[in-house]
Length: 107
Image (cartoon, rainbow, N blue to C red; front, side, top):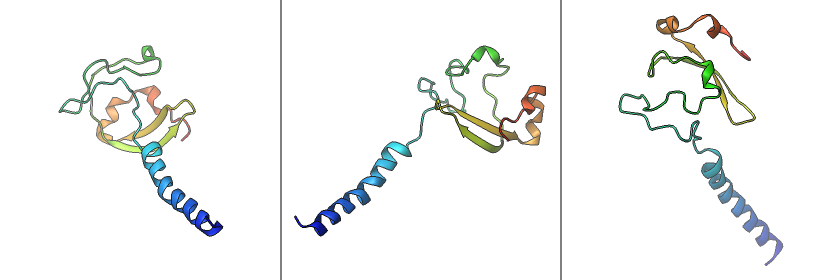
């Protein structure tokens, strides 16, 4: 096999293989809570709403399923694989916020 043919073969493997690796391993959706129950038809999950939450004792669940709308302002992926997501709630949901909720880490 001559040098040009080897180069073309390697280039073809890279051109075909790189997208496959990307789509199979890098772009696949990641599960935030691997053991979380599937959503029900109304969008709520069954089971413990704090399953998979870091230090759940710091949180107080008032309603197990509350839907909101807003704008995601920032997403940070932490070194441990966690995501910190800052959401600006739409005005109609501002009553859900309390004094400590206005801390905007990194924004």
